[in-house]
Image 1 (cartoon, rainbow, N blue to C red):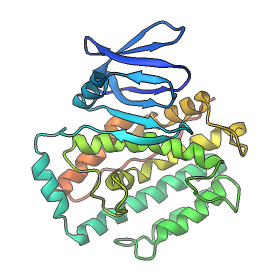
Image 2 (image 1 turned 135 degrees about the vertical axis):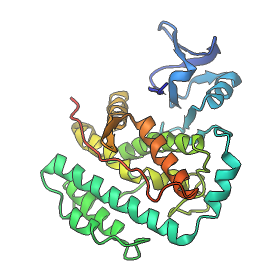
Image 3 (image 1 turned 30 degrees about the vertical axis):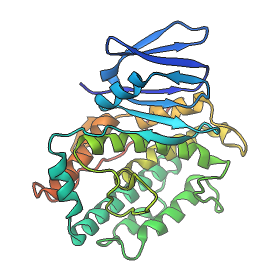
Image 4 (image 1 turned 60 degrees about the vertical axis):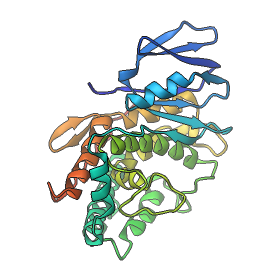
Length: 303
């Protein structure tokens, strides 16, 4: 069964518990809600007055779900992932750690080209032109030694937000706070899929920051990031400097992330998409296939 729920608890004090394999959500002055644990992919706790039992964390992890905590700014700052989610995990860990450098460089080339293609499609959707990104995409070589990814990013961000000074800055109180939230949700979906595929989210293809526990998730989510980017553009009036990310804005971003996308000619939800991408990587590591399965993004309009 496909998991379809991303739950963001942000609006009021809430207590979470478990009963009969359901997550029980009891908000102040609101009727109790129950959702089957098996239907839940991600739980995000951003309101400061939320309590939950140990059983919530345990059964969520046992069923392959992800739990995200948020700090005082209500932005994600921690993630709980399943510890053992695949019966061949040890074997796949070994293949992952022993993957030769030329293979990892070739896979990163494929991811980078896919990411730039997604960015080009995003610019076409928002502004009617790819901004020359597809020309840059053709120049990406194995391992991207010329750092075409960065060249494309500079061109992409300036054109996307019509701001020549715009830069990705994790601490900036502008569009970046919206992007940070969306990327955190996307990262959780991909990290969960990686664990389910028997791979380790820390061992990346390209990202290798010693303080980053999710390097592989950051690698594999790259082609999907523009889903968040376009959603942030669509938020419009909330993008004024100093505005906070509201529940309406969060819901908009989550709807964009969970829109169906094409993979191998078929429409798939993001959970299945992430699963197929990470499973294809495990198969590359084991010698069962040569390339990753990566999506062809489309950008639905939300009002």
